[in-house]
Image 1: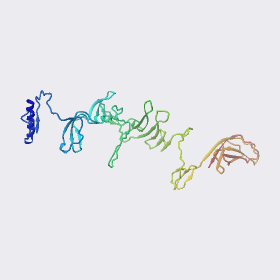
Image 2: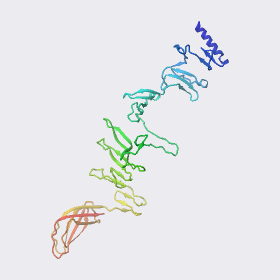
Image 3: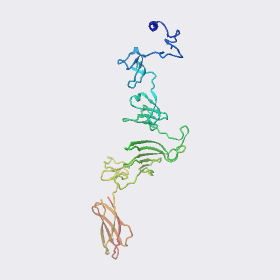
Image 4: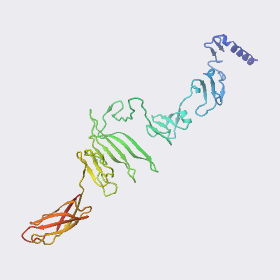
Length: 393
């Protein structure tokens, strides 16, 4: 009987509500349009409350403007929407969560405590901040202070829409963050490091690094830039390009002493310090250029392109026979690459008998003849010795 009476009273109140300013349930002095009091404020009953309509799914047909602000209670999670209270927001035409915690507490397998983004988690992507300040995207166990991890596209883009371009800044300081000081001599300032997996573990196999180039001081912060790669058959990096504070650039030379300093060559194929690929010479020569057309190497000192001299050399031991008065004798030396018509020079690498003069010429392909003449008044029998021959083409 009591329940029936309450129901009748409730219907009556709702019926006359438009005619009155405030409605009170369990109170004679309502403090708002609808004021519902608990049966006992200090010791409330288990059913002292309001039941919002409970649903296990959102309506198939979206509400309209008349339902703007209408509230429901979702009894189970759906997709990225957790169980909880929702209201209809008619402007963007969507159900909005009320009081749901986007960030919740959790822990990873390493035992680290963190907070994580619930909606990202529901979609299968971890976004966490550990209690010690590490941030992970795509992982709940970030190794570094800030880590992106994922199976696919992990591009990192910084976009700017004005004349101030985006910058990626690495700032390193001695002392502390609050009380910075200068770095130590030759200390590393910052780096972009490249890593990969070699089948047994993660390896660091390249990078772009900046160092102090010497000792910093007030008004002086000299720096050095280094690009490193890892050769085949090892996991140890080697410095490939070094730019010193002087502006000198070293190619596999850690201490370049010229504007461009190249590493030394070896007998191994592909290790020459400098190599030109055959190409087409400039239509109009430009001062200071070096060009190679596959046949000749050219240098343009001003406005005229000139072929750089090609020198071919060899050393051979020659033992000339006895040479009579006013006579001469010729012996040959092999100089690979020599061609008829090229100029050449020759000389003994030790003292020669008085009264002898010499000359040379290219007599055939790869062949130079040295002529030794006797201008003395007596025959001369030269002692065998080494002769150096140089052919210029």
